[in-house]
Length: 457
Image (cartoon, rainbow, N blue to C red; front, side):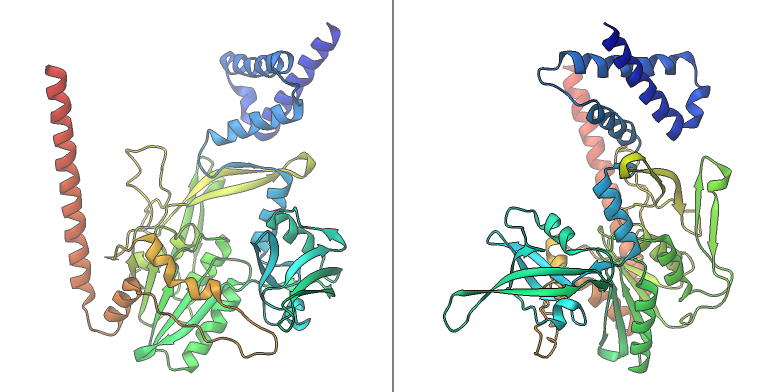
């Protein structure tokens, strides 16, 4: 009996500690809230004592935390130690690794391509090599993520890879050991090329710690090639660092222009982000490409350039992910990502879309000036050359070929080069949107009438 009471008090203490640590204002709530806390303790205790299988108290409490956070929105999240560690690595944009793109093929962790200039490339690791062991640890039954995690490590540390390589002469496989020194690997986040009629094209994969540096290099290279207009492609760009979005926007805006502001329940969460001087590229004609996969930092940049009429936006309405989140470390290496504010464009448009409330689902996101609707599967093919490029040590770098149809890019080029007028393209988009709304309203009215008839009968 004493054990049960002690167990109950332990759970209650843990719950109160959790509530008090993460939500200090909970102490000022009414008795009703305290009753709910007691109910939580009762539920956990009842599960522990009566569930058909033995349970783990830590897992039950972690599950309760997930439930609390999951009730808030789609972006607040409890992060287990592994996820929290990955989050920190992703936002830094660098890690200690060997520099190879991998995939699981025929149940083997296989090298897709080594990245030029990295340890794997210099060691002559080849596309198609199968990784058997990492530091003599068999990875045959590991997931791809776990195998990659083994290959990563502190900068300057060494790692041994045992690979099997197909012998072209015999058709068999030979086993080779490679000893590599882990280096800082900077993922490719920017691709660029010159289109006909001196239209510069710059595709951003995401906004990481190295985005600004890479974008500047790309713009300098395009400028040297005689660029007279620019297309910034943010399709399928999920976002990343706020600082990256602000810094990229500054390149194209004049002095004292609002880029984005945040607003939450607390006054201290109101924050403005403005330019302090003229950007380096404030006069170049410009278009921004977006789609339903453009989110977060992508929406901040496209919204700012659109509001200031600095660029016209082409494509489809963006995802609508613009919540300010604070990450709090928790005991045991876990973390809590909590939404504390939301982002607004310079003209006060809320970027965040509420997918849980159907009545509000049509609000938010960045709607393009010129809408071009393309199926996601077709649009993904446009970017296949970036994902499928293979570098082979000892051979020339491959020339990327873009064969897939890209009506979004074509529309932007047509407007920038004067083949189509922007105002006419905008007017056509507005007409099509109005038509869709009218059809939706008409359909909604018919559905209502039908339901009324059924009710009357």
